[in-house]
Length: 404
Length: 138
Image: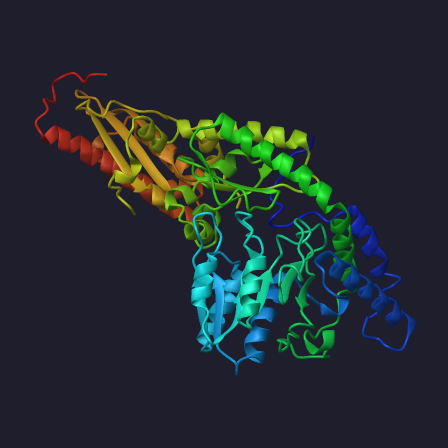
């Protein structure tokens, strides 16, 4: 077993060697521009891009023409939300999203607010899911778009996407979903999930960084968006810019592999995840699961280790790569807004760790991680005045702290 | 973020972890920070009634590695000092010694606050009329 061990597969994943192999010819021999219509180099590139479109469409129940290539999910989210807002501005100016979305969605919505759009940020329940009733109540005759993620990047919680889509369609509102964490991990189908626009990225599914896609529905309803980048009018005018052919080939291959292997892989990963969770909960007291366990990605667990600050825990398990919702690990010095939205207290948010298991993790690695985390949590609790106080029976929420 | 050698050393081998009897009149206890802010330091000093020197210092800290290192270092520096000299320890001294980056300066501020809080507690106990001559109970 080699260290460090990578358990941060929500941040990014290594590229599958089979994906690399598929991509390689498109850097050198088959380097053509897919938009070159009058020679063999262009035709070859275009053929590869078309094949990738087909592979992606097949994974998510779409048709190839509904797949628009982008530089990644941040661009896909921006393009979907701004593109719809601009296209349907005459119909209305109201957008509904949720408090636990990725910043690429939240900050896009905030920018639109500055331009005069109205945005409702739905709160989530304690399990991390939006309430369908609150969604219904938030809809107005000015609502043009609902954008709610498929699965959350921190807590892995799956939203009731199909129901949200059904509500959207009943009210003739478009539904966009940031499905970056879900595609290739759980069955995603734009037809049965009633999705009109959907963001995908390659690097979360063992493909390369810097390439993604936006699904844009062409039938029932036919969705139109205004391109946000001016240029050569690629991707039927929705996204100008020379196509990243090797990247696109990689995204296609990654989708094909996911399609073939997802069922078996998700069984294996949920077994490893449960082993990790049960191992840690069995060995340590005062460990809390953040978010629904039932409606959750198979490879995610997010735990709060009470009385142990997250960054100090990461420092202790320095041969295991995970991430924390602690303020000390974020650029903003604020603890995770996702956990806050769940109603997790800031004290516990500071102690949270996200584990994301991936295709290349082994059972041996999970055993090692359990041992390391248990050892370091115990050591840091010996160092924690809060653990002392809790053991003495002091209710920490009743203490008047000298906040600074 | 990379940690300095000294932060890593204090994190891996924290000095003077533990608890002193907070009811001992020669012991001053300072607890600063809040769980919601992600760091809580408890720092204690024990002052020798005859020599007036800090003969022992202990800490426990909930916080990031830099917070643990700052309080560990503070206990090292406190030992052997008079209370008045201890008040001269500045957060900037801790920043320099541990090479703390700007985002971690608040950890050193917290350690300085903890020193002051512990000394304040000790002085309050002394002022409250505890006989200084009485040998400290351990």
